[in-house]
Image 1 (tube, rainbow, N blue to C red):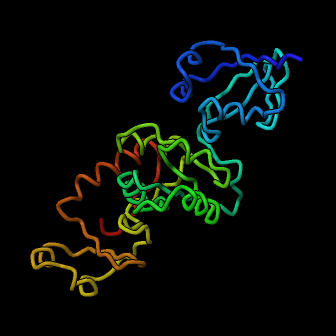
Image 2: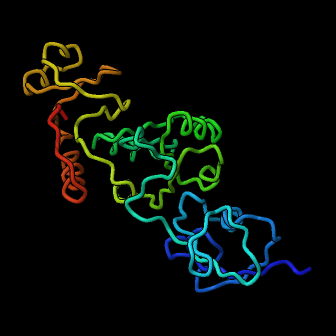
Image 3: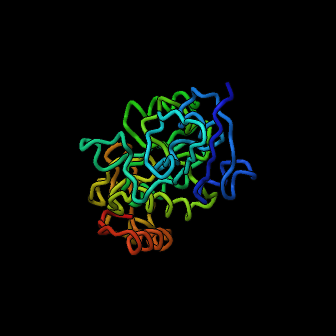
Length: 253
């Protein structure tokens, strides 16, 4: 008996994952008659983290659907803003986990008050996926293989190499609530307002004379103040708040 033949098309944002001949219009594919649609899509290079609705002859189907002969499959991208299907009311707001290659993005997310755990040095794909599952964190990565691991709680591919574009992509896709200046950019801990006296041992003479407002991380003890770097960081915060919302929180900087 002949194997089923199906046709597929992919949303434009998914074209970078598939071979060139499948990027425009419909393409034909013979299946083994037993593989699920999710398995077929992933075998063509598209991580399921990047797939939204799957349509078969115009009707939505789960990724467990086994395609029949002559069916047409349309693979849609994720709708924005997205909330992972695994998320529950208990996981509010979403928390994130970033791999070793996304350190700048992690710091910018923390600057905006987003819970962004970051693994450096590299602990390996299995450990990253296990942490995502254990802590119910959305894993952000540019590694397609990592995003195909079954044990992931949830994940998302980071499409750009540029930190500014990476940040906009995450904010657009997941719409996390913003609370700028409320997290430590070094360790992800919460910041609290403190007196100058309590962090004096971390200050140089010029800093102690020039600044009066300080914050400190409750986890690692790092002190923060509005130093020479503040204007650059404030521009990142202001742009994000202007486009995606959120009320700036004054807590050092």
